[in-house]
Length: 318
Image 1 (cartoon, rainbow, N blue to C red):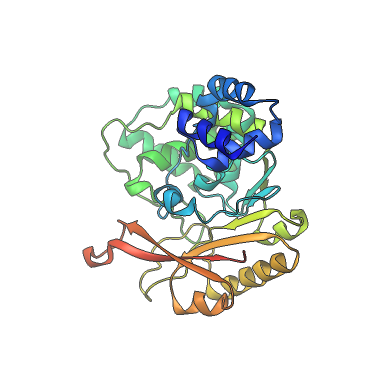
Image 2 (image 1 turned 90 degrees about the vertical axis):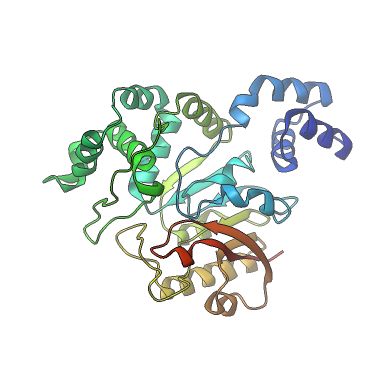
């Protein structure tokens, strides 16, 4: 299909060129009319969006990222799932999605395989501080979250994310979620239509979802695959590390291990992109690769002076 036809479809359906190219490549439409019919019929699935929020999630940066993604690549790998805003904006035929957060992985597997059961459980929950504290206490029970089904755990994750303070995910050294309740006006913790559409998208793109560390990407990636790393960021100040995504924090020695994986993938002829804070430490780790600076808004900080626009660095090997 010609570039003109692809751009025409983008304008007609309000989609990015990356999404349109992905579907056109793996479905191999015979002509523009067949492609337009597909997008018309599946537009709700294609426009599914991230349904959980994180501190530092990438949706606000997608407009800046569009020009930074590789124009052509094979499979897609995202070893730090978080909000998956990048996955939603690429939609490759085959995606490898992973993370070390067991509850997050369980949520996405549940959405892919049992969306209606998850929705039913979420619809049974009321929005109140009492219900929030009840669900939050599950990981403090004798057997912890093992007392509950995968559906219940997935619903708990979704509910807590949408009803806690600033959508912050933080656990203590025992792995217990410890963010307080926050009073919002009608928080949408069910997202019925979005869950259904995301389930369709995950299945249609043959997404492989695994509980795994970032090193696993070396076993799955092949020449011309695209890998995007969005790790916990290097801290800007000594006191900035007030959130923990998992039981152990992403200290600088692990940042160094990630940089080694990045360089190995580069030697494998993969296309690799990484986001982080624009710090001297990160610039030194990836010295010799392409750097781009983007602006992100940070609204969570104990001091007002620490909120607002911050610089992020995007590292690429292409």
